[in-house]
Image 1 (cartoon, one colour):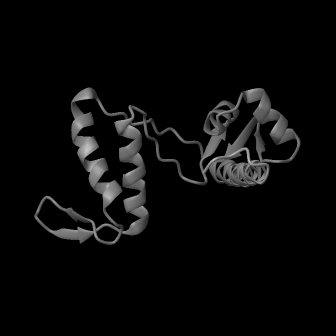
Image 2 (tube, rainbow, N blue to C red):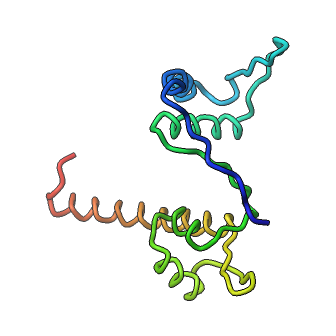
Length: 146
């Protein structure tokens, strides 16, 4: 299933209002925030939806577009490379090395969002662990002030 969703961006007039919403979302706790419907009904915002709103508001205030992708959506290789913030040739190397699952749609490679997201989570976890090790080594050598 290919995604055709477009990114949503805020225009300059909306940024101030979104900053206010973002500030509230950043300082509130999931499970406490409520949504007020057009008929005045109050609903608790579930934690997962709260997190989506918090992240989307943050990105919109930075001037970034926001897009929601279903985990089963297929990405073209350039879209997948953009998601990982790497070049398309680097992504192709990862695909051909078997580090990220993909399938062929005719002569084109397609990658599922879930597979790209899983790879990104693993890559980011390795990077965090490496950084912790570097900091520990620097502290051991007295090269790092806390």
